[in-house]
Length: 512
Figure 1 (cartoon, rainbow, N blue to C red):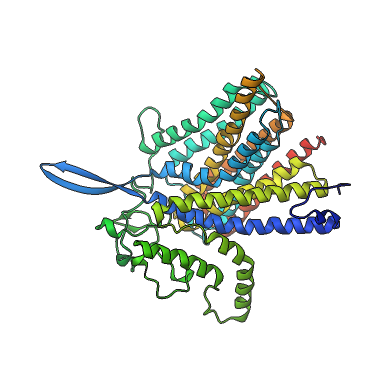
Figure 2 (figure 1 turned 120 degrees about the horizontal axis):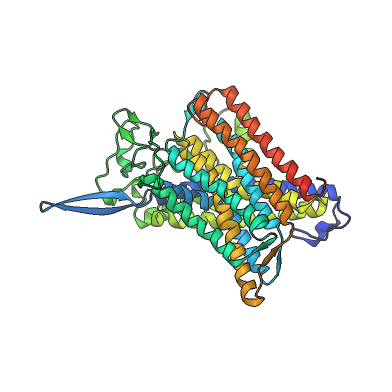
C-alpha cells in the first residue's frame, strides 16, 4: 500500500478511510462505470445504425423519363472506420487531447498517455477478439466477407505500431518532432483512402480479392414499418415520407437465396411498457416528443413484467435498480429519429467521454492508494475502461451481423485510430507549441518502456492474427464454430493479453 494518498474522488473525508475500504469503493465505482459504458454504447451503436441508413435522392433522366432512386450516403467500409471505430475510440482520443492542451508548454511529455493507448490497443486485440469468437451460437460460423478490405485495415494497423517504434527509437530517439506528429495524423487519411479504394476495387492499388458474400449494397432500401411486420416480407422503399429505420447490422441483402440478415422491427415492444404506442406516428413532431417521453418511462419501469419465475423476477428487479440511474441519465439522449440519428450519436459520444473521464479518476485513485505503478494501471484497468465501448460495440456486431466484418473491423481500425489520431493529435498540439515557443521538439519520458511494450504487442498480435487465419482455413470462418474450439481460442487470446500485460508491467517497473 502507498504510505500516503491525499487524492479523493468527491469528499476529503475519503482520505480518513482505511486503505482496503477505499480500494474496494473505488473498484466498485469502476465496475459501475463499466455498466454505464455498456448501456450508453448500446445506444451509441443504435444511433450509428440510423446515421448509416441515411439516403439521398438521385434523379436519372433518360429518354425524357425521370427515374427517382435513393442511394446510401455512407459507404459501409468508411462507416466502419469513421463512425464505429473512431466513435468507440473517442474517449481515448478526447482524454488524450484534453490532457495535451492542459499540459501544453511542457517540454517533456510523459509516456503514460501513449502507454494507455497501447494498452487499449492490446485490450482491443486480445480480450475483444476473445469475446467475439464465442458470441455466435454453437456451431454458427461468421466470417469476414471482404478479406481485401480487412487486409488493408490490418496492414495500416500493424504499420501504425511499426511507425510509432521508428519515430521513438530509430528516427529521432526519445524525441517527437512536429513533422513526425503531422505525418502520424495524416496517415489516418491514407487509411481511409486505401480502405475505400479496396472496397471499390480501384485498379492498381486494390488487392485482387473477390467478395464471397458481401454484395455491393450492404443496406437494403428503407422500409415502412407498416410493411415490415412479417420477417418473410421483402422490403421495398416506396414513399420517402414514410421511411422506417432499417437496422444495418441486422439486415443484409435480399437475393434469390433469401435474406442473410434477420429483419428487426423499428420499435421493439419488449423495450417499452407503452403497449398503445404506434411507431408509425413517430415521424411527426408530437411523435418525436412522445418517443422521448417514453424513454424516461422505460428507464423507470421494469421490463418484461410478465415473467413469473420468482428467481428470475428477483434478479430482474435487482438489476433494474442497479441500472436505473444510468438508464434515466441516458434517457436525455434525444431519440434516434431526430436528424437521422446524428444528435443521438453525438450525445452518446459525450456521455461515453464523460464516463471515461470518471474511469480515469478511479484508476488514478486506485494507483495512488495501492501504490501500484501508474503504467501498470494504464495497461490494465485504465485501458479496459476506455476500451470498454469497443468491446460492447464489437460484441453487438458479432451477435447481430451474420458476417464478422464490422466486429473485426472495429477492433482492427480502433488500433489504427488510437495511434494515428489518439497519439498523433496530442503530439501535434504539443510539438507545434514547442516549435513556436521554444524552437525545439517534444521530449518523451520513458520512451524505452513504451518501445518495449510496442515490441511485445507486435509479437503477440502476430500470434492473434495467425490464429484468425488458421480458423479461416480450418473452420471457414473467424468467429464461432465448434464450441470447444471457440473457447480454446478465447483462452488463447486472453493468454496473449496476459503475456503483454505482465511483460510490459515488469519492464516499466524496472524488473526486466
